[in-house]
Length: 179
Image (cartoon, rainbow, N blue to C red; front, side, top):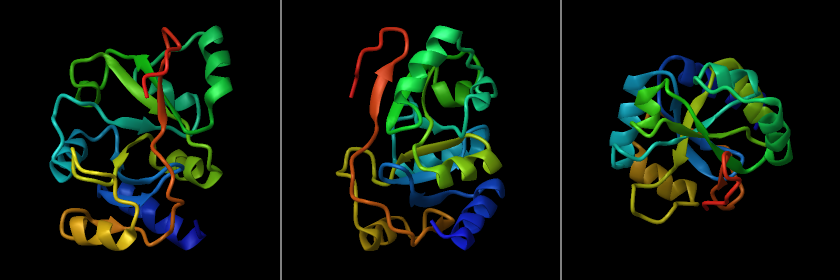
């Protein structure tokens, strides 16, 4: 990610805009996690069931508390074995109902890419969901993403991302791999 593009993305996200951008795994529809209006708009763009929570990306452990998540030393040690990296971890929270959708848990990921953690360090936690319409195949091609989402999001990054796969998901309490 070049510095100019990173600055553009930070500006759009902090201005309460929705962007499509590369993440550490795949292209994502991204917006401020703490802004309930942005989260609702992402549900509309993605045409996703409102009962299914999104993954939240954080820059470091300190951002967990801003999501109402508390971890103990043992949990932090475990997280250190999967973070930073392409693993989303389901953790309990009672705050941020607009994010957890009544489930009292959030799937949280600390991305492996330093540029992305730096970006999130400046924006605060972000919702990141795959750049596709719910129920449809994930779109790897930027031209196809632009054709689908051009008039539904505020900005589409032209930065390339490797055609990889979505993050795996682990439940923190059981350490069970869910995806």
